[in-house]
Amino acid sequence: MLRLPPLLLIGLLLIPGLSWAKLDFQISGLNNTLAENVRQHLSRFESLPQGDAEDIEKAFHAAISKGLQPFGYYEPEIHLEWNKKVVKMAIDHGPPVLWDQVDIQVPLPEASLGAQTRKRIQHPPFVPGERMEHALYDNYKKELLLGLRQQGYLDAHWSKSQLLINVEQKRANVVLQLEPGQRYRIVDIQVTGSKLSDKTTLALVNTKKGEFYSTEKIGELYEDLLTTGYFSNAIVDVERTPPDQATLVIELEDQPKDQFTTGLGYGTDTGARGKVGWTRSQVNKRGDDIYSNVQISQIGEEVAFQYHIPWPHPLERYLSLDTGWKREETKDRESSVLTTGIALKRSQRKRWQYSVGVNLENERYRQGDNPTETITYFLPNYHYIERLVFGDKKNPDAVLKYWLDSSLGFNVLVAEDTLFLSTAIGASYIVDFTDKHGIATRFELGAIMTNDFYSVPLSKRFYTGGDQTVRGYRYNAISPEDAEGALTGGQFLNVFSLEYRYALSQEWKLAVFADTGRTFISSHEPFHSGAGFGLRWVLPIGTFSFDLAKPVTGEDKTSPRLHVYLGMLL
Image 1 (cartoon, rainbow, N blue to C red):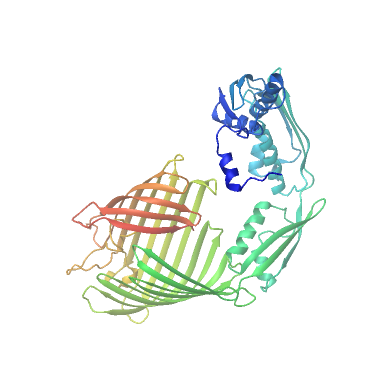
Image 2 (cartoon, rainbow, N blue to C red):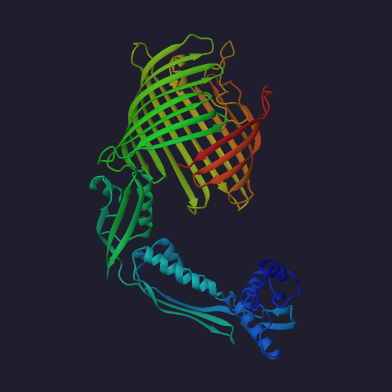
């Protein structure tokens, strides 16, 4: 047998006009969707079919008809011309088959069905008088059956499913009859593979014995197990015992005892920064965990140590014992704070979270040319944040986030009145009007109630300016000034922002924005405003922002500033 060298064979394949070249189908008369589907059905013809002209025409007619029927066109008019290289097709798809009668029987009480499933049953997509599509019928069957199984009808199946097409009358009737079977309940929960106590692992399970099986809850459970940080892997399975019993089987693999993280980064507020972290996710069987972090940046250093005690759910409610030290130095102020405290923290699946606690803080600070001061104070505090998603959770139309921070401070080492109450509230709202256009807006208001503002520690006063407040200004550069021009911090805070976004793709957006804000002791203090444009990179964990902004009010003559910021999800 003759064997051609590989290079010679490749060269022959590149010579135009040889017999193994595929047919070129030139289709006219159809839109892109129909033409592409027809072309898919014709792709099996690498050369002209065998037989005479009538056989060839029949073969092409059959393929074209199969490509049009899924879209409701059963009587096309086709004109063909061909040679050994090219097949020209002039196609008129003809009148469509239309939806007519719809008979869907799901013998279940509405109370046992989820909202989406009820909507599918009450409002099927087969609108009488509209063009029939096979894909609409097939997808409806799959989605309705899947929705029922996700709600515990694990044995549900179609006892009758018919799409009856009358080509002469150009009508399509739908007949669907469901056999749901019984709804499964969780009768047992088995957890293996972890050194944690049964009390802690079962606290993570969001379904109880006797409840109906729910795929949504199983998905949330899987996410919760991995979010705790306790486990490197989790397998959640369901064993069925017909006709209506299910056992939840959870196999866990614990994380290594100690985990270390390192990181380098840059932000225009902090400059270059480095970070080293250590976590011990299972101090004991109860599930206590330790987290520590050391971070160094161009404006200061921070050391944090946290000890968490589940009470009893490690994600939804726990005690946090916190100790840390933070030093921050800017152009005309320096502050170092040593903190220790305890807080009760609550949260619910990334929607809301709050903490109630008390700190003992020792702060050493210097403002401008004033002498260094030291103060020790108790700080009962409360923090709350909530995030509301409108529309599809994975691709929302709008997101509203609002927050409240409040703390009551008093000096524990001096007799005079040094009490202060600090409160800040804020909200942000992002909405997409269309696939391309949207806006983002934000405001924050703050106030410190005290008889002597200058006795309030420097770190508790209000400053603004920077990546997340008024862009175009350096970090915390907006503040009242003393007689020497050094920033004193403000007793009150006002910040507002408005941004227009244009989507280049699902991940990338252009932005044009304007910010304004002030901190003040006297209400006569002016607002400082900045404006600019930027780029948004939307990631699963949040949004990366790249902004170029410049001050536009007052006597500010600074050059445009680049701001880089990663906004994390709640």
